[in-house]
Image (cartoon, rainbow, N blue to C red; front, top):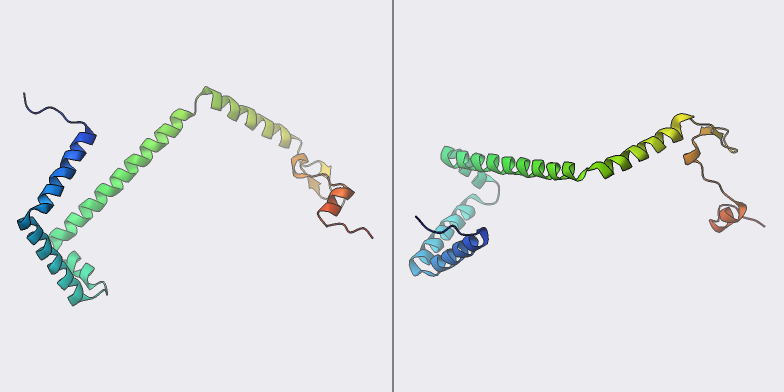
Length: 148
């Protein structure tokens, strides 16, 4: 029969509790202190020049472990990105496709004639949606046109 299957949250709680109890044990505390002292002495000896990283990478076992972890992280990230893109794709339902078609047809209709409106200042041709009509009062408010 075996043990009952735990939910993810319950499993996380149990794991956290186990680690908390493990850390409280005196022999484990001593182990952690020793490991931390070793790490600190290595850092002191090598300094912060990056020699520590070089020494760590020179050990092939540690280097392979580090590379494997990096490959796993990258694969997980790719998978998460792919899941996100699938969700985005699912959001594009028929309604959004209709809106997209309407927008596209409006744009094509707006540019179908080409630039036909002529500017009174520079005599260049412009599309209708590129032109903004200005009045004398509007220019005075923007302080572009100064009237004596």
